[in-house]
Length: 435
Image (cartoon, rainbow, N blue to C red; front, side):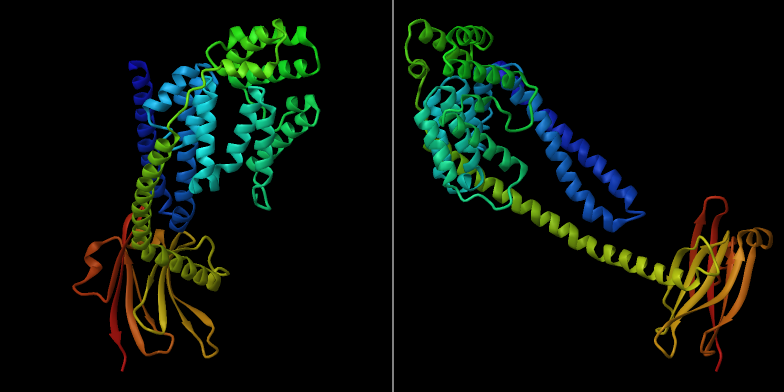
């Protein structure tokens, strides 16, 4: 039991550490990308975060939990971990799997039927449950129950457009139907991506032995079953293989071998009740996370909208004056008047000051009020000039300087820009109204 608890604790600690690490990386990436494309951050990085967490969670699960069965083929230990970790209370399919591979077929089928009776689980897992029931019944040689599982699967209302997973399930069901129709080789045909785990190879070898037995090749079938009985002695494949050898030697029906399995009932109703309780808790937690997510989006919405607005304004400005200046980068928009938008931009190794307004045809027009190169600012310390508004109603004084003293007492507008090579450059506008 200590070993089981150790496995569960290691799995949970690694999962927690992974979640924390991924979240920290996400925050760093968000901070870095927010300087360039904040909208992209909220539209792409959040779904990407969920996708990455899901992949890593599956890998950690495989490494610490499902690998016990898939790679180590230790069915009893896998079952103990599933029970001790109360994993089956969240996903009864795992209980069904763990019970079957220790040879407890009765319990596995009880859980399968309970899943099909539960509306929430059946809606999502009915196709896979019927496939597992067909496969499990094939493994124990119960052709009648396997045919019933295939029939019930065909009665399901499957989606018109099937996912890859659903197509694989349908192909697997068809494989068992072909076997029941007398095509014994059908069970050896692949119905999905070939797996590399040890359990898959054991099951496939078992399928080959069953096919040989169906063809009447008892000697080759017996040899294959004998090898499997040794290689998989602690799980249902080994148990069935051992019984198959005894059935062949005693000239008994293979299907009777399933009667020797440890068929113990399980409290499926209690399992479903625990699932319902966990489902309600998970639903509440999900609502809390969705509320937090919605609040974050609402709080960030003004910033995202302003960034989108900035992008539109920048493109509009660039389109108006890109024929005169190359490598234009908008630094600031200045809304001093209702009918004109002033702007400061970096262009051609210097600073550009101008404005935009609508003409009589409601089309944007650009005015360039001043341009100074970085060399001029470095040489003269201060670049200053005056400009008249496009309608001659206002005259204003402006300057670029690397000297903070030019900021004045109460300028109409002031701002500071930082450049790697030059440090801080101050921009000032003072008001001079012409009557």
